[in-house]
Image (cartoon, rainbow, N blue to C red; front, side, top):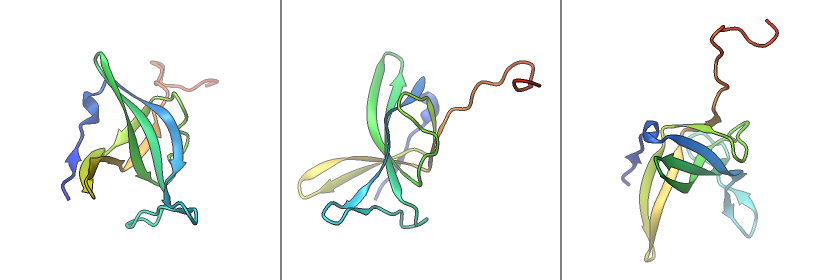
Length: 116
């Protein structure tokens, strides 16, 4: 299966449009999807990818809960890839990332935190 790396540095902003939620493997039993390599629960996050005057929302899977990621929050995405798929006449693109995390607060020019 071909995976296509996506250069997230080309985007002017990436924002959480849909908060993280565990992916369901079996709807009848409620069993959660688990990453084969890490054994962690797979989460899905809706991300708004902004470039210039355009924006697209894509659902991105990530192994493990993206701690601290909330609706409307700017995020950093590591190792984003797109994988084209086809199954029984249906087709699409699946997105997966190694990590999704909140962007850090900007560092002040003084280099010290509050109260120091």
